[in-house]
Amino acid sequence: MDEKNKKDRIFVICQIAVAVLGALAILIKGNAVLLAAYIPLMLISIPTLYFNYSLCKWENKWHAAWHEKNPCDGEPSDFRLITGKIGEWALFIIALILAVLPAGLF
Image (cartoon, rainbow, N blue to C red; front, side, top):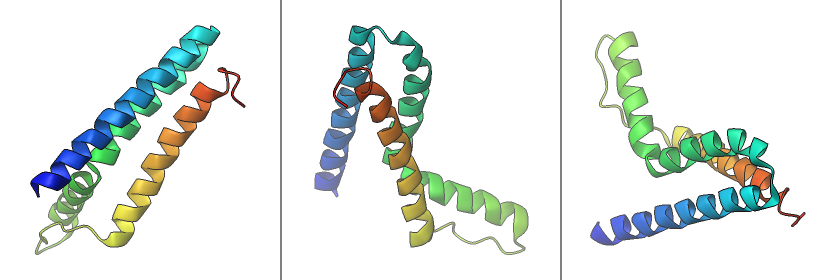
């Protein structure tokens, strides 16, 4: 389990580095208006990608506690985990597109 945590931390550090480089690209091109969309997208997508399983489990526990007579343990389904990842990656990619467009790479 320690190896997986190490890989996850390295991946998050890489995502943060890419986010910082994207913000710098926006600032260098002088399109600071795009930062109003870029920063919230990155601030949402990076933590939710890292904590996807925990957020899905937490959401299931709350739903079970409020809507079921005998609440379950909150184990998320594969479908919920995958749809969460798709949405989170979509936010991350949209933010990167915002960063790349003003940098003249498209």
